Image 1 (cartoon, rainbow, N blue to C red):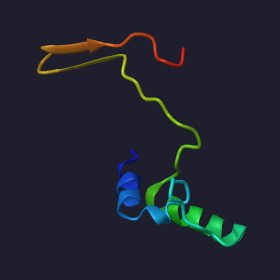
Image 2: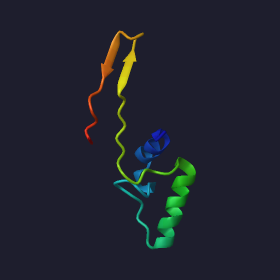
Image 3: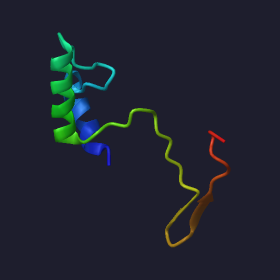
Image 4: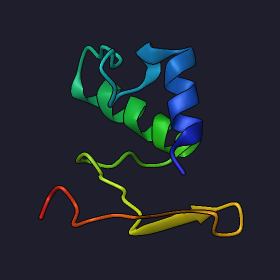
Length: 74
């Protein structure tokens, strides 16, 4: 889901209005325009850190199977 935005930021970190090297805007109108352009190209960024965790995962027809404990945030 976030791969296009991640690749775009890696290629040109200064264009991401959300990233560590975020675009430097002179005023609020420029910042809003940069955000709108980013969203139109790559979608909306989450406003907080996300923690994705599978409760179970397997591959090789079940030969490798892992089950997670409680998530770190509980």
